[in-house]
Image 1 (tube, rainbow, N blue to C red):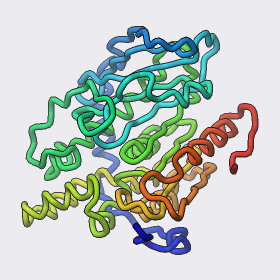
Image 2 (image 1 turned 180 degrees about the vertical axis):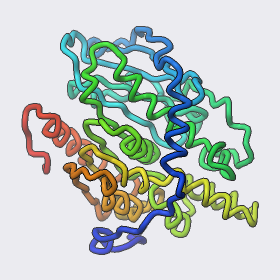
Image 3 (image 1 turned 120 degrees about the vertical axis):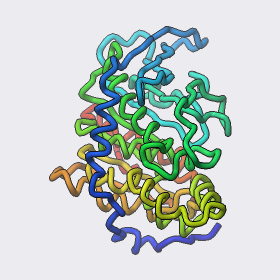
Image 4 (image 1 turned 180 degrees about the horizontal axis):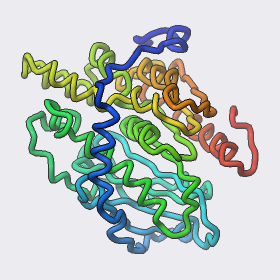
Length: 336
């Protein structure tokens, strides 16, 4: 797929104002306040994984509406001191899978919480274990269109709330340095990490690659791939529902969350990404923290000949070195 979005020079100054409802902050404050009434941790059970260098626990925490949400929590075996924690969010259609599938962050010396995606997990990977009991509102079968006609009913209202609660769960777990909590994700996970950055003011850092839910209206005009294609397919059948759908999506816009962020931020984007067009990531990056008065460290890495995979292992290496430096640990060349 050749480059189809803006040129790199245009992306670097792409700062569209998001389609932001007047009650955006009130909507999310109210949503999170409702979820915060319950004790966050429900259960923490050790599991045997066959890994000698990693200890893992099966965690259930209370997310949106107090619903149980599953997660894997892992630490380097034998670690005694409190560790910085990386809260990771999975991609669209994927569940938490099996605990030995994602070892990068724990091998780098971090505590690692991998959140399950409620009502997802059936499209690829090794499955999930968290149902979504509120998925009955009008909308299509895919998560991106569940509850599309009302922001109170949309799947991502629940999933974003779960993502915020996952940070609280990680901070409540033993052996975690709560003040050094990091949000990480690719694709849908990147969109969730960015939302968390806008809703949790004291994150230590956020690392986002190819984020979904950024520049949503433009993405719907550019691509029929992935989750945006599901939304377009729904609107192709439900003619006249566009206004209600756009209103709902305005409460989920990643650029709006980015504007409210405080934490240091690391972005990555493939310029041939037709699933999450690069203009969305750049819009979020260019408006990052503009409402908070913060001036956090931030950087973005573009991969001109890559699509949704972005920088892949090269980007992960950059993330590892950058995060080590941001957290004040042993130095390294974060620009490598």
